[in-house]
Image 1 (cartoon, helix red, strand yellow):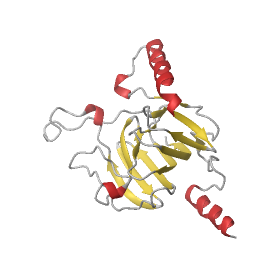
Image 2 (tube, helix red, strand yellow):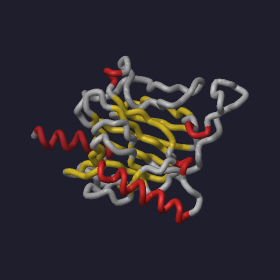
Image 3 (cartoon, one colour):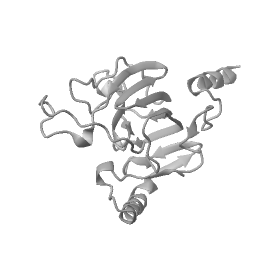
Image 4 (cartoon, helix red, strand yellow):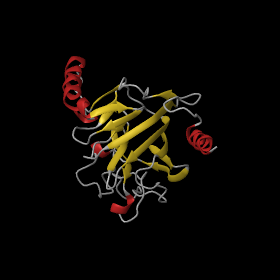
Length: 229
């Protein structure tokens, strides 16, 4: 009975009961077996526009960073010693689910359109501020989440992320923590971001989804996406 209840509770988060099996209308970004569809980090502003040179950048990143990412028992694992993992494909507007788990003091995040970031961290190390906030925003756009909805360290957390235009909404464990908030373009910030006469440029139209390296062991699973046209 207890096992069945746990399965039903997990299913309520993503609309499915089996790990790494997407709900109707969604595509799995992680197949539960290997890192197909993922690659080593090449930051969006550093991409070479020449396809052959970009392929060489990816080859070098894969050789350097992918050995630190792996798959164990249907979970993406990271040893904290490489760099971020990013999708091969770029995405614009989308709805996304992702389950994540960190250890004590852990720090990570989800980049959308290759842009930092939807924060993942241990709230006890940050004055009780929970995960899900838009860490790199600068006022007037809010940085912190509306509330702390994190589960205890070592337990699985669940994000629902909706990206439309330059705005992001985030639900953490079914609690709304970011409500239709602009995400600053970290890569295109003006030299004086506090100057109202030099507003932040718009986000890139598309970019990869990234699982952020911050020097900590990480775990991810149930990563699903539905593109919004």
